[in-house]
Image 1 (cartoon, helix red, strand yellow):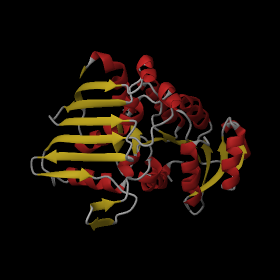
Image 2 (cartoon, one colour; image 1 turned 90 degrees about the vertical axis):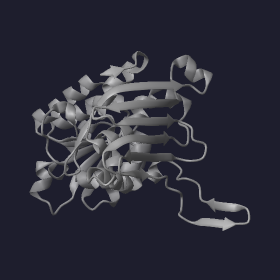
Image 3 (cartoon, helix red, strand yellow; image 1 turned 30 degrees about the vertical axis):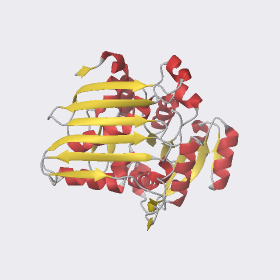
Length: 342
């Protein structure tokens, strides 16, 4: 695989971090090279009594944890029994809102109730320890992406879960968002013929805090992982070569070697060329677009606006702004992937 030297350290793990199969809407990392259990059978205890809700612990009470808590509480397949966070005050706030019990450690939550699974919504560097703890107790796991920052560690974590007989699911929500699924279906059914190229835009809004960008906001592994995963599934193909380049919009980021804007070109083994543009700071809203061009047609996913009303008057044509950020744009997908996990 040809990879430009400057960004090799970013993309070699990324192409494995984002690697996963899509069979019966199941997301599992291919780096295991094994067959794993489906979401629908994620827990032996849960499947024995399908009439009851699956008891789960949510680890993480931050922004993504709060999104997951709301969706779990609203889903009749789940019983959110506990919220875990080393910041106990944060765990208490989320637990109180959704009638769960707060804990500082997953070990305490496991000992307090007969759980069926664990939802991990903590920073990436904490995933390893949490997943291992769950696997030791025979609990299947749904985790935010990526499972880990390094491909070798991902390999190891999946092998541990396989050995423990539990499922490990890493959520890439584009595979569950209705529009992205419809575009993929069109390609898979041959409606656009042979895929030749794809153009993808991922422009974030609002721009994350500088502290996040400096410590955990790598634009390649944090942003592009979503679209690299998606387009590999859509094309049913693997990357042959990569070119990537990026820029820093502030001196602080430049001095730290952190890019907040980047362009990636992926050449696939069957010949398709994919261009991915990414930015951390779209001032006009959350910009998410994807086009797949084939020799017989085009499949595209357009931006979503706050509403679909279009007003035309003497001053022109007006419509509402783009959706604010990812919780609004991908709320349906977040709910669907949890529903499938159940």
